[in-house]
Length: 137
Image (tube, rainbow, N blue to C red):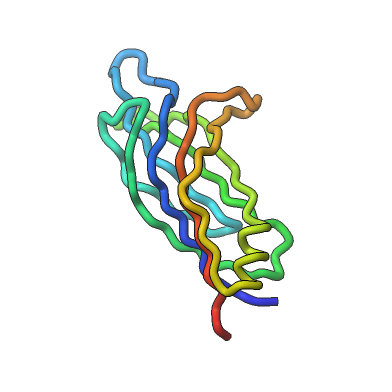
């Protein structure tokens, strides 16, 4: 049983579906969730279907947890109404955490993950880099 830090590099997204029929371009952002920890990216106003973030987020990891999964929920910011759901990507982190604990550090260069709706239909892709560093406790 150990602990560590998960670092997520949110790079960009491509081919997101537009939800704003009247306003034109969407204003996407990402809600990142690892277990009970939540982070939120900046809102890319007017970025449309292909936003670029290049933002880094950190999460505390307890290796005794059974499920290591990162959920990236893509949203469209709306000023005068509720934000619209664009889709989500789920990344299984179990191998990254296990190997990172064994070696002390593990990095996965940015890779593409499918963004899907609740019915699992494809609605774009998101590019994310991941790293895990074991704590020296």
